[in-house]
Amino acid sequence: MRKAMTKRTALISSCLCFGSAIGLIVNSISIFFPAIASDLALSTAEATLISTILNGATAVGAPLTAHLMKGRQRLSALMAKGTILAAASLAAIALAPSLPAIYGASAAAGLGIALFSTIPVTYLIRSWYGGQSGTALGLAMSCSGLLGALANPLLSLFISLWGWRLALMLDSLLVLLLALPAALLAEPGPELADTKAAARKRSHPSFLAPAFWLLVLFILLATWSGALIDNLSLYGTDCGLSLAATSAMLSASMVANIVAKIAAGALSDHKGPFISAALCCLLAAAGETLLLAGTESALLLVAGSFLLGFSIPAYTVLVALLVDKCLNQGRTEAYAVLTALLEVAFALFITLEGSLRDAAGSYVPVLAAGIVLACAAAALILALGRAKAWR
Image (cartoon, rainbow, N blue to C red; front, side, top):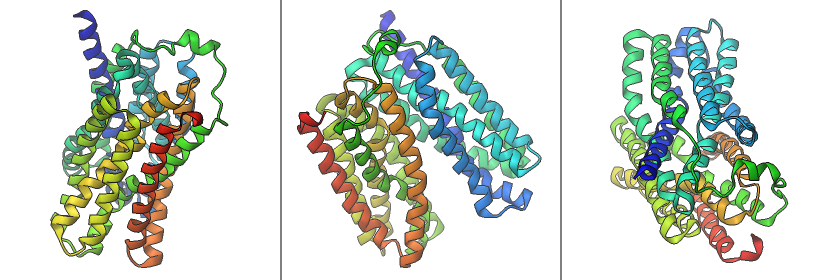
């Protein structure tokens, strides 16, 4: 009973930490951009650069976090420090008198996020749930969509009532209240064979191994569809949809984000991560097909947006599980590098897809490319699952 209770505590801790880091910071920071731009007389590019810097710092912080976790510092202490740094940096953004100060605080927030989100949360879940960690990991990562969906309307209301600075301070306080107690409870469990002591004695992962580079290729192929979600509002506008219908497309993708992570994790526990990842990619391709064919039907566009949301687990929840299956050593370091890669690829693909739309005059080539790349990703990951010689 005590072990079961501890497992549940680890899961709750993971949910609150990951949900706060991604849902309350990464996914919510864009809500503040219009108010910040208006207050400081910034261009759209200058305002959105805050998010780029934050995500870039998170990507840089992923390998650093993996390195720190190999040390003798307690996991709870490391995650607590990350929570405090991220919350304090949000407050610093709210108090910043100039744009350079906001950019600097955004970079600090990104480093803090890395210390209590993807890498440590995945390590914590795997340490308690071992080979059956897919469902738990899916639940933890789905909390980012849940908390983001709950917090975004509240933050918008706070901005309209009290201004962006006070609203951001409240967001900072909320992160601290939810994530800090959860981080202090985080302690590795008994199921993880790759313990700290063993990790310090092992050699570094072979980044020349075929399986590692095939996983890199898979992430690049799968991330294109996920990045398209950030372009859904523009695509809905291109299709002549009303604001309400466009919002329904975004809401459908957010609901799918929550459902898909849980479903993909559970399917991975029963059928393996290779089949789960391939199915996610194929559902994303089906969603892009509906988006391409349903330009005159709001219902088809909403359905396509929902299926597109199933692309997200392929490059989030399932990456850690695929690493476990494909690599024999140095998994934490390899996962950290892959996490950094997908953060960078995601940011680049959002911009690239928008540029391709501008050049072509529509999202048709973006969606067509997404269908091809998603199917290629499914074929690749199934092949990797069958070819043990590549692992």
